[in-house]
Length: 256
Image (cartoon, rainbow, N blue to C red; front, side):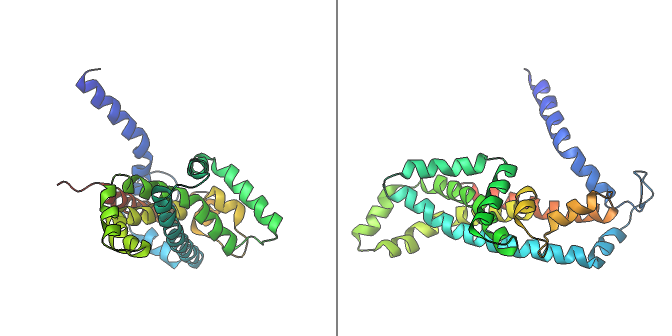
């Protein structure tokens, strides 16, 4: 395949992936309330979105869940990644492989299995079950991200710290953590994005007393796509895009 053909092929892929999002963003500024006919640019749908109390409350709930679950998943995932790299214990490879099982499992399977588990242990669907579920599917991404970075370090650095009298906590605090900090922040951003965008798992594990934004949007779309939804989706896409870009930049190694 020659160069022009490769460029055209890649262009078609990107058009297929991102053209619907571009259309969504454009029509979030369309003054027409119904239909797809362009009738002028406006920002009134963004202002009307801010006046919708249910949407704002759902957004606040989503931000709370995404922030809290990503912090917990990053904390546990960081310790797990360091343990997988530094220590050799029975079942280590099996446990690490199970992380990929969780990552590759269909969302609907995970949602149903988590719901059945919570029912089995007697937990009522709500904020707590939603938090635990988001931590569960975010955790493997954090571990894999941090483990990939820590595996590229020179092990002699850690050995040198131990030779100089540093204990386990001091080695982690002053040597390992500064080296993996970009991956830790990247894992947090990735977890935050995954939690903020999740619909399927959240649909199964949340209760009627606690509604998050993706489920609110889903319930509104079933009655027809309103301009406020286009505006809100544009805002969410912008937040997600920024988080993903920052995450990828932090993963890049600094050039020497």
